[in-house]
Image 1 (cartoon, rainbow, N blue to C red):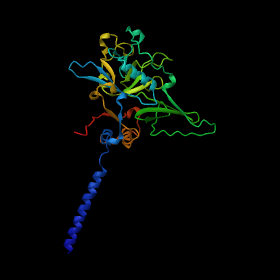
Image 2 (cartoon, rainbow, N blue to C red):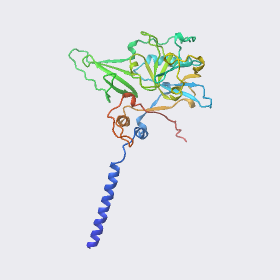
Image 3 (tube, one colour):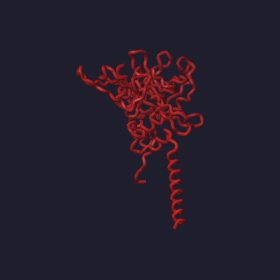
Image 4 (cartoon, one colour):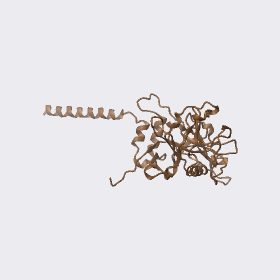
Length: 332
């Protein structure tokens, strides 16, 4: 009886030891990386991008036959909608077909479309009826508590410390910044210039550009451009076809030699392409728990390579995940 009891006690102790070891291994499991969090995000945390909000720019193939397509997502309401409408109008008028990439400035921007007046290139007339935007449209302003004795508290969430504004955050999948003023009654927000964001070229103020000349950021985020130029979207696929182009040798990275300019074959709205060719993209909802975990992981890297979590992140160091998806025929 004593021997049987000891065997049971030993077995129980061994089982407990194994359980503790297993628990310790689970407790010491490495923290997931941002990419792992994104890959594990459930389907319901992803938001489909309407093909009406996607613009496909086709460049000539490379000498080895590699196809070059650049896909831009147009920014959603309430930001820059007058310019966004112009871009749809211009694309549907095939305005950019046969134009060119004119400027590639290292660590800054790639610019295409309407040439500057002093480039010696014949300007192309734009379609009639384009929106003429005001400089005030760079920013969205919300006012609450108009009564003199009222108190309004804005609570942007999630918020990040920002060097260019009172706070930075995300709204409907877009990186934004904002200021709170007027005794807390006035909230101003605007989209920010991160890598891959697309803006509207313009002349000197008060000109705001009509959308016929566009650029995308290919370097360190030029946040000093915020609220000075309209941000109208971001590149969601094919940025490598722009960021890898030879740098222009002229002032501000313009190509001095016309032969260096990269021709644009076509620019089309995604919804206007044949159904089988329409781009299908979705982004990780910035209101989801998955995005909150992803943002925290970007700010505090705990996966095995890292030694010290940074404890914070710049708004542009938390790029909103965007991915392609395929439509699955349920009958298959």
